[in-house]
Image (tube, rainbow, N blue to C red):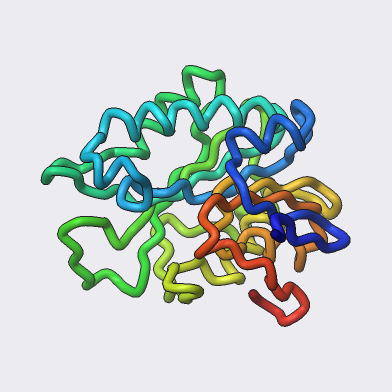
Length: 227
């Protein structure tokens, strides 16, 4: 059974990031961790109605990421808040407080709006927080003067295997601003692989994990221009 998809620049793994990252990546070796962690509705915690368990799990993820990301590097997390029992689960607060406790600072905060501002969804927001954390890193001035994430970024999402994904123009812009060619980019919740494709096309090394086989795409075609 295939569990890896490799190119000259990296590996896309079918497996659990929490156990796989410590085995595959050295401490302080990742320049950019860039991911959208699964919302509660994408996990077993949703059917179990276990909001507390979900938030505990998210807090278990964070130290795994900080262990391998360089102090001068970046952890970029983007996720839409969802509801459970009518209550909004503020994962942006969980990320910020959890990473602050681990010595990381929120340096950049933006809003990503999917498919315009008129959409209404009673269960999952159609917009995401874009949160960029670091210990000692700085967003390059050239990026802020030119191509960087606007305060409110409205984009038309693309669909792969029934999963909405960021456009490559956005992914590559973030990777190019926060890393250099040859740097290592990590996506622990890679889904169908948009961040990995972005790393490949910008000549960065990459490592991605996806635990769900229905999203993991071993035939990821980087040479096709997207996925």
